[in-house]
Amino acid sequence: MKVTQRLKTGAKVFSFEFYPPRTAEDTAKLFNTAVELKALSPDFVSVTNSSSGVAPYRTVALCAVLKAQFGLEVVAHLTCLAHTRGEIAEICDGLKKMDIASVLALRGDPHNVDSGARRRDYDHAAQLIADLKKAGGFAVGGACYPEKHPEAATLEADIARLKEKVDAGAEYLITQLFFDNAFYFRFLEKTAAAGISVPILPGLMPITGYKQMQNFTKLMQVSVPAALKAGIERWEGDKDGMFKFSVEYASAQALELLKGGAPGLHLYTLNRSRAAMAILKNVKTTV
Ligand code: FAD
Image 1: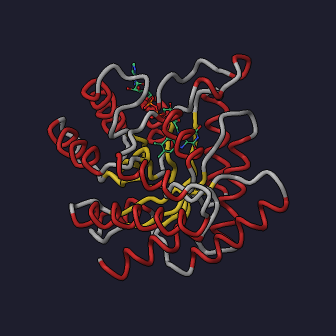
Image 2: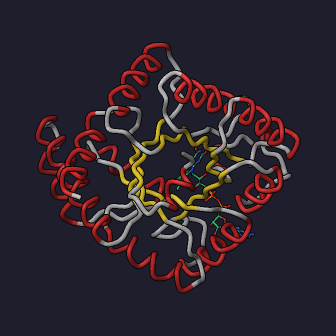
């Protein structure tokens, strides 16, 4: 069932995010991860896309394998900064031929796109969403940012742009990761007030080390609550202690979100299953 159909049933939707591996060893690891996570019956898995020339085809290929061989419902991420309209049309053709009908439509990060690779057909995700809807046959989602997108001047300005994505055809949204649920609940109120009524799936990621926390928070400009920072500092250097703390923190976050009305959870896995499995098991035995 497409993610959009599943969301309409009102049942909580659980999903995992993967990225295309680069080596044979990482590919084997990802396939093991997929097998393990499939046992938890996720509603879909999504596959990221880096913004360079042939990258979308890696995403399409991995989606096709996860769907055909592992029987998983897939959502292909598609970025637009490095593509012309013609290239996007070709990628969409490939997706259709592989029977992949769900796309998360994104702009991509300008700093990840070489100046020579940047095309000028698309400046924002809303334009890609409009093209995908025009092409027809795709269930389309978009990204959103409870603590605002780093380039936006204010959260309100960002939400006004988000409304344009929904008006262009985004049928659901997945959030940037966040560690403080207050941002998500405030975001739900503000987006509803702005007339956005599509489901907003919270994106969660268990943090497994101090460096990782610093990298992600710097890159994505998300806040780290004092309790999380203290825990990460407390368990740095103790792998098992860190894992336990991290899973407990994310599970508590997940439960509060679901009880507070979130339509489900999107877990950023970094292609590893252990933490994602533990969190989802904790959640599913409680909800
Ligand atoms: P947009 O919706 O275009 O917004 C980007 C910025 O432009 C915002 O500040 C917005 O307020 C502003 N804006 C929008 N429209 C206008 C307008 N008309 N005029 C002026 N300003 C405007 N990146 C990847 O490269 N690959 C991935 O697979 C990937 N997956 C992601 C999945 C999720 C769930 C999330 C949250 C992000 C993902 N990203 C991915 C990162 C994403 O590409 C970056 O965050 C990017 O900077 C913004 O993408 P967007 O689609 O939200 O852009």
